Image 1 (cartoon, helix red, strand yellow):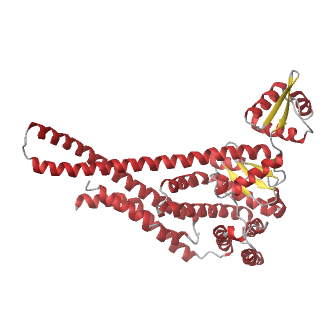
Image 2 (cartoon, helix red, strand yellow):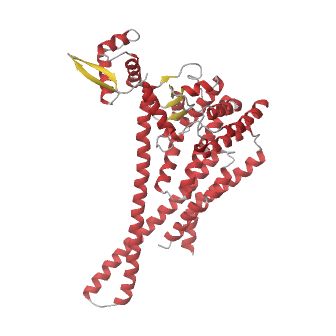
Image 3 (cartoon, chains in turn red, cyan):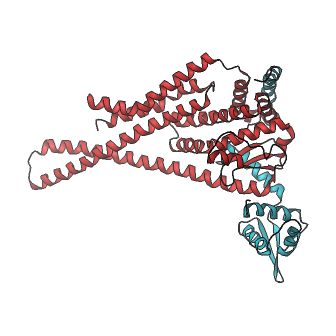
Length: 330
Length: 122
């Protein structure tokens, strides 16, 4: 019990106060991988502290129930020390109620998370089947060009991904994880992209698949669904998605060059007339990605951001342990 | 080789391209011109497609005549709607290469690209 409250306090502090500095530090997208790691560390840290707090609460409540039974027993047997025992029983009862409510809340959270992940998986599978059957195979040089330098099963999944073309005017490109991993392009996309740009788009999508970004997205989306009002998760999912895009951009820029990637971003983004009102946030994300590509990276600035992020990560990785230690010493 | 998955796609495209309902035999003969394949494989695959709702069939004598339950265009449109609909849960929604934007924003971006391309690529 003495540990539960400080740990809970720590979890809440990370969940409410960490998003702002993390957003600021990861916004420039200088090292998107480190940025991703920092967001995920914060989430893991808050969750670990909250889980530990919950465990301590449940243990305290279990002890409380025993005490309660003892009290009932004694009050039946005789009227010895009724006053103090009753008081402590009431206290323990309250404690037990809190623990039960917390356990229920944890159950609801787990259920919501599972439902979100499950639904996404089911819809993705159905979507992939339609894409696979309706789409024409992408032919030509870019289609088979998957010589990524990375190794391992995920990388080969990205390499083996089948690219299919769907007849649709809007320029669209996205990837679907699974067997087989599938990259979907619209015919409208092929119309606006030159071969180098198409290569950049494919490299970008393959990087998503090779980096298993779908797992990150599923995880953070699930957490956001489980804790809808918690800033770390509700804001975190957008930042994780944005940083994953930037990771894939970096891979595509290495492979196809920055001009091809920037050209592809522009062609795809402006290729079709779409109501301006619907765009806000995503459009901003595109200019941020483009601006990043146009910028000459300054090493001093890189290092400063990286250092701050790394320091934050260390603090958060050790956080729950330090809080528990301080609470036992106090 | 992707086995049945790939064959399902091939068969659906044949059915779509075919004028009117088609029997397994007709499709099998059609496919034989291009690849080595067993009649039963075609039959099983079409049966699967029927079970999954892609194909409708009516009995005609001893054989079934198959038709697609929706046109290729309808499926494409449905797919794109699903992919572009931000409310969906599909992974597709989250892995888009880019979202569309308005004219002012694109002017701004064009400027960025001009700067990029005028500099020698790094």
